[in-house]
Image (cartoon, rainbow, N blue to C red; front, side):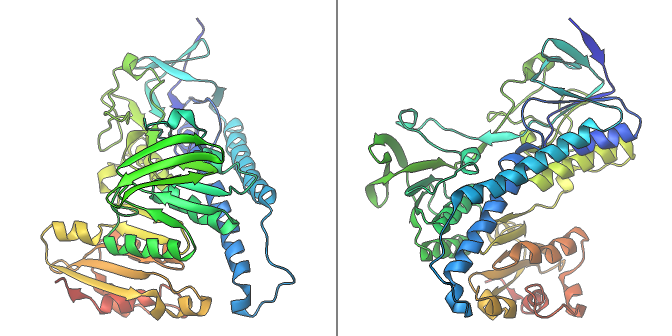
Length: 460
C-alpha cells in the first residue's frame, strides 16, 4: 500500500479546515487536506449561504405583497418563479464551493485529496487505498440532518434541509416536523413563496431553548402569516397518502391528522463521524456520535483534534471558524485559548430575526443571582416603525452585583446585527453602564440599546 507522510492531515473542507490549512502551510508545515464530497461544508452547500439567500427571496416576496402599504403600486399581483429563486441560491453555492476549492488547490504546501478518509491508527488514515500519516490530525467533518426512527417514516418520501435548498417548485402543503431554528426558517420562507405550511413540534412550545416570551412572540409572528402550528405533539406517525404524506399527531389536545404534499424533517443534526474508523484510533465519542474533546479541542489522543459541528461544542459557522482560531492560536502562536471561554451567540433567521447572546432570562434566574432586567417592544424603536416592522422586542439581563451583562435577546428588525453591541461589551467584560455615555446613531435599532439598559429594573 502506498504511504505518504505529512506534518498535518485535515479531514474535511468545512469552515475550520481550509483556514487552518492556510495557517499551517504559512508556517511551513506540509499539509494534506481530504474532502470526500463538497468543499465549503454545510455553510456553503446546504446551510447558511443557500438558506439565507432563500430567506432574502422570501423577504422580497413579502415586501412585494405589502407594496401598497408603502405607496408602491404594482401592475399585477406578485408571483414566485421558484426556478429563478433556486438558481440564485445554486449560483451562490457553486461560487462559494469553487472559491474554497480553488484557494486550497493554489495553496503552497497543501495537497488536496478527494476521497473518504478512515483512521487505521492514531496517527494514520487511509484514503482510497493510500495511507497518510502525520503527528497532527484535525477532524472537520461536519454534520447532517438527523433522521429518527418514527413510525411509518420509511414508508413515505421526506425532505431534509439539503433537499429544501434544491426545490424548484413550491409545495402545495409543506408539513414541517420540528419547531426550532431550521424548521421555522423554512416554514416562513415557503409560506411567503405561497405554500400552505404546518409546523409540528414535539415540545410544549417553539424554539424551546429560548425564553417563553420569545417563543410566544415567534409563534404569533408565524401564525399571523398563516402558518399552522401544533405543539405538544407527543406521538408523531407517518403514512403514504395520495396527496403526498399523512402525518398523525397525538398530544394534549387530542389526535389530529395533517395531510401534506411534502414533509420536511427538521428535528436536529447528527455528526458525520460514524464511518471514520474512529475506534481504530481510540477516539471516543458520546452517545450521539459527537467526538469528545477537551477545552483545547484535542481528543483523548494526543495530536488529534476535532473542530466544527462534529465535536458537539457548537453548531454554527462562526463557532467552527472560532475552533480554527483556537487551535491555530495555541499550536502556532503560543496562546492558551479555550473553547470554554467562548461567549455563545447566534441568530434565528426568521423575519424578523432573533439575535441572541449569553444566558436566557430563565438561565440567569436559575443561578440565584440578583438580577436587573430590561425589556422594550420594537414598536417603540423608530427604525422599526419607519420600516413598518414593529414585531418583537429587545431584552437584556444583568448581574446586579457585578453590573455585567449576562445575556440579551433582540427579536426584531435588524436584531441579528444590533445584538453585536451587547456581545462586544460582554466579550470585553465591561459593566453595562458604559452604554450610558454612548451616543448611538439615529435612526437605528442599536440606538435603543442604551435606553433599554438605562431602564433596567430588579427582577421580580
